[in-house]
Image (cartoon, rainbow, N blue to C red; front, side, top):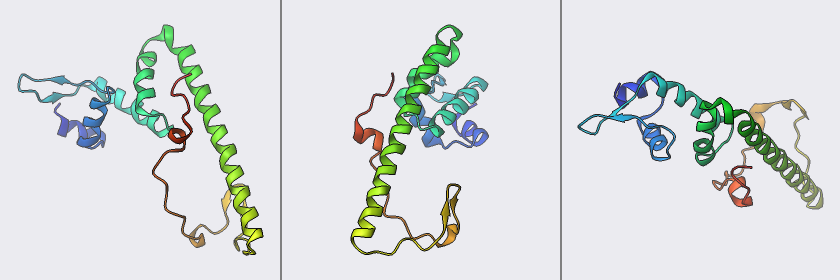
Length: 152
């Protein structure tokens, strides 16, 4: 099927499909006229790519993982080490974020600012609709700023 049909069938945008191809994640066949042609195997690959992106893997790590996912001999150890490294990285980031939140709480006290008025617990905000608007998100990813390794 052609790119537009594949996009409609999978819910992916044409732009995303072209990006995945550019990054070496998907390799559709080409017609004599140069048009992309996708097969049912590409649907499975796309689902895997989406799962890995949702788990915060970058395209270069995904590109390295895709062969491991299709080769049972190399997959188990490679996947385990990559997932272990990702978990370690995320736990480290969680620790850094906790430190940053603690520092903000210290500054709040230092500057005489009242604590946030809404009750919170470990499961999240008591009243989600009344949370103050967050500061603009810094588009630079923490992992990129920290210079962490892509693969173990």
